Length: 251
Image: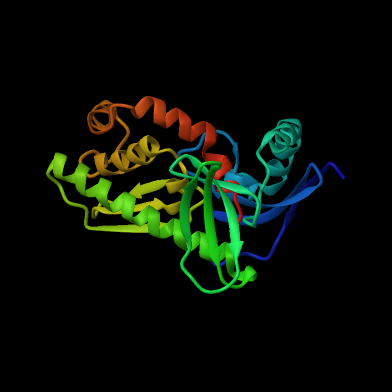
């Protein structure tokens, strides 16, 4: 079946402005999150990173029937987008994943030992030891450690430049954003960013650190962002184009 109307599910424990359902499209049944926004003037549709679900934003009071009609009108667009998205590769021996933009072939070895990245004359490898069933977790743990080391150093560099410290640094596996900065000065990053090239990692950190000064995306914010990371425009475009592929890797 190519298309199916949204199916309601049991109400989730969340605010009344958010509804959850499922939606069938292109032979796939995807989680569907419907959020009301008082500032919205029309319905908008977004595919979550890694094609892990759909999100519809509506003005307040839009009935479910109208959401279903909206999805039906956009079925061709959805089918095309889902077909063009990158595959969802599961971490396993033999596939390649990038670390700081360099592809590493995953290798599994028996016995105990730490996960390590190595460069060889034939390329680069990411070698994990231990039980095969734990390989995805070991790879993810390695990337988280690498991400923390990289990000903490960049946060210290950029906060020193602006003269404002970050209150805390957190690493998460978020699917809707790559980073965030709270009003209290808490910075949060997706550890998956360590798979991007180093300049892109620098851009993301500079972006969130700039929010310690400007909690918006106005001209002053972007001027500070480019001051911290001169390659802001190029790196922002890279992340927009390639970020979904990084989010699609299954650990």
